[in-house]
Image 1 (cartoon, rainbow, N blue to C red):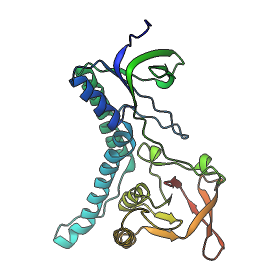
Image 2: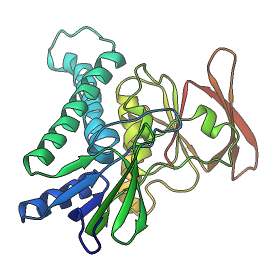
Image 3: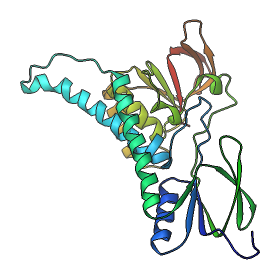
Image 4: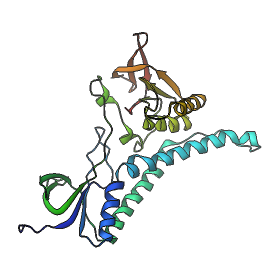
Length: 283
């Protein structure tokens, strides 16, 4: 590289909502722009395309699965309004395939939008060499050096595993995986009471799955607690179970493929356990 001459005016690290908006806007203003985006597979091996959390493992698939749950509720209500509807079962595989195909179409759409605006896209994992240069490593290990006058970091975040809990990483999944499961998660324990936890538990219950939420302290910390109570009371009335004031201590795999979860009741100090098909960490 010639000293003082950069490959790009702007380099954006991260191809999510923020990074893509930034890159497209700069390109429209006449700047030479590149986006580097790379998804480290989840511990379960789940990976996805361009578009970030919202498109791939957040708002979009969540709203679609929530819609599937709402349709189930309408079918259950229909006989009360005179519709002679027979009880129907939900097929997770059909829903998941449709959701995943829709998400893939959005991945493609984002690539096309970058192309239309002459933004160069690199599927590489970037790290800084100096204030104007990054080194990107591709899936096959090939390295690429890119330089830019300005570099924007828009990498977002990923779910955390409680690695101090025995079996958490080995047997649990997160919101990075739930939308890409090929088979139904079955009876599910959702650990945590964030909006991610409650949204996932809500649509799982709505799809007819036995769902339990384990709360250590309060639901929706940082939100208005009167509204939080309305949310959890409504969820409970729809069939979601809540274990309050509890923390898990270990997860063990059973010979039949089920998961045995042990937890402590923080009020009484007693241990309890239950069996689930899936444990979803949303802490």
